[in-house]
Length: 398
Image 1 (tube, rainbow, N blue to C red):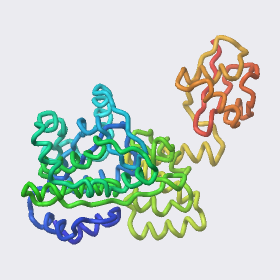
Image 2 (image 1 turned 90 degrees about the vertical axis):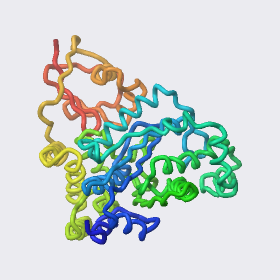
Image 3 (image 1 turned 60 degrees about the vertical axis):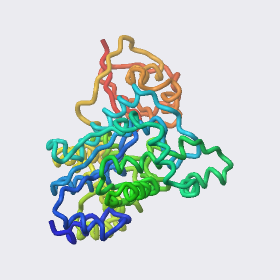
């Protein structure tokens, strides 16, 4: 491997390296690099922002290096206070196990699991469940309170006169010590994890190990601008979203974010990126469609990307009803509109959510808006209902 070329390849989505000389040394050493990928399974979802780190790890795997996928089943019970102004709730063990399964399913969309020499799955309960109190106290004695309290989110808590609990204070110590137990050579993280992983370097030095290299990656705003992608804010493109949802959510992206999303979330060439920047000025809709295709292509393949583009063009650009929409069977010929939509969702949406769809003008019958959920609607075979921008169903009278 040519280390200079590889580092240049990584720079596209890289924010910083601690340290660059250390990274060059690893790449030139001809040894298999052990890459620590640690996750707490508090929420079982990943989005394309998380996948920036995964794709970088995949590049290392393709050159023969190993990802140590560390499930923080022990530390999940504590919860890292990163970006939080209040203590996280404790998650039951059963939920941790379910979340772990869903995490692995999503990670498999990027990382290679086909060769055991390139992937290893560990859990930090392996050592923390067995650790004696004296050993843990020895870890605490190595780091000062002043060092821990300097973490930015703890400083924010202090400014806001909010409580900081001791189990939160020790979280960075636990995450840092994970690097010692895994003998980590490298970790690839978002910048919000830098404090914890720098403690990993600190503890590795204390235990006579070579300090891990840390690469932090670029973080983009969410699709609506502002804060980074988050499920709670709904401003994200999820790995477990369908290809259609990935395409549709990309089409909601602010025009000014198209170039940076192209750079961070696709592998388009430098020449293509320059063309896209010009296209955004003259035809942002086409630039966004091309971005949506590239994102879908990366996770679902060329054929699906082309199909989703055709579907989107037919439905939104040509105002066509898509083929093969689901049918819903009704026994009665006249029903309140809200009951018709409720039957389609089959309990997947609450009554208040369904009523909100009507108020927002999101329900149509044969392309005519229905604003009042209590309106009596006369049904006929073949009637087409549209809900929102991407959902249709056809009436089948029993």
